[in-house]
Every structure is written in structure tokens, then in C-alpha cells.
Image (cartoon, rainbow, N blue to C red; front, side, top):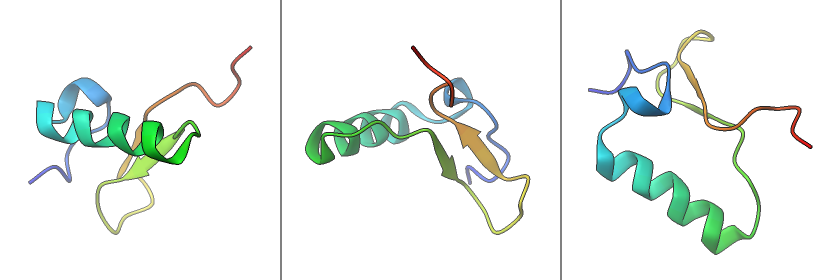
Length: 51
């Protein structure tokens, strides 16, 4: 159960690898992922305001 995760480090290695693979396949950066139905159940993958 990853619903309590709030950072990438909180996620299991396989989940982190999956997010990175999705970025590579899609050719775009993923900023955040939902880990549950709640509005607060979000993991920020990358800073939303990056140079």
C-alpha cells in the first residue's frame, strides 16, 4: 500500500523505476502522481517550477 507515500523516497524502488520509465517512454517529465483518492495523497516527483 503506497497511499501514505508523500515523497519519491517513500515509494518502493519498483514504483520509482516505473515512474522514471513512464517519463522516458512518453518523452515528458512527470511532476506529480496520485497515490490514492484523497486530494492530499500526492507524491511530487519533480519541482513544478524548474529551470
